[in-house]
Length: 424
Image 1 (cartoon, rainbow, N blue to C red):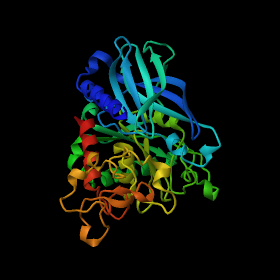
Image 2 (image 1 turned 135 degrees about the vertical axis):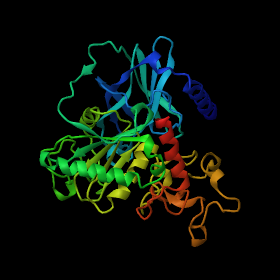
Image 3 (image 1 turned 90 degrees about the vertical axis):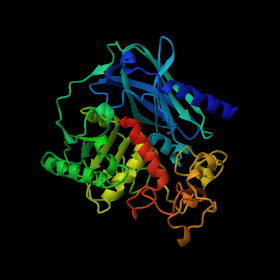
Image 4 (image 1 turned 30 degrees about the vertical axis):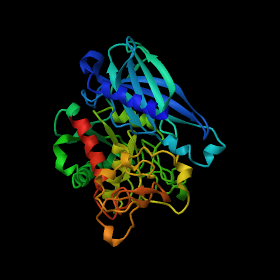
């Protein structure tokens, strides 16, 4: 029955994929849906916060239905009159990471979150669904929205200046990335602009971005902080910054995130965008990337160039980390009876559905991590934070370490497919 459910879902999504007329259903701006997601390791609920109109729709007007089936969650938007699916996107969040922490076993918490969609012309039904361990989506929240409601917030955007850092053309036909500063004071805006140019240069040194430079736009917004840097709780350092970014997320020193999603979205809305990249004015090593949520990276660490595109692999293409920690086992993080939904890790339960087609005949599966197979696509044990039970495509990759600036063939294809989806 699980197979049938999943198969039917694919049929529904594929049949809807090429049939959505943007001008029939949408206006060229954004409707933002903000909510609180709350719960613990056993249960999750969503609570409505607000709806907000934003001036730009940064996404495609052609590819409105998600075809990738990635993410821990997805948003579905249905035309209320005939229940036709007119928009969908997968995404993940910091909440789902917290669910796996020790704290979630004995404490209830809530997190502020937000998703965006094209602004509908007529009433729609919004659904937020969560993926379960068996990869089946279940509806957590449903709300009917009248786009003519006067309760939808509208703000005049006059506080910050914005710039085109790298412009290739019409934002509906490009991948649009907005860079937002955190921990840059008014006197450091020149540094922010210089850092933006530097990181855009880093970005286009990596394939497939290098060969598809004409498919990408970069924007920036001059959001000013009162103080320089970021919070470093483990060192007792606290800074007054516009986005309140901090290290030591979930007690991991290098995990750099923010929970001020409302402010992140408010600032990003000054430009059209598909991806949000927060550049943090610090030389401490760290970063973070969550699928269709946001990216963060420290600006001045020597490894910042590698971290910048590694985190983008997470947030843009939902790529998993391919490194492993000493503690933890695969069955603590994954249902080992089904394949992980991330494209670049496997437990070999259904390797055919992953990258087996890229493996040369005669390559052993699992593949020994030896010099003989150094440049060979296979299945190398150690990935997804665990040393045993999960496998990665190659010995090394941008998603495994900073020793290479290249995505492996599996990750490369995932990134390129996503780029072409946004830039069609």
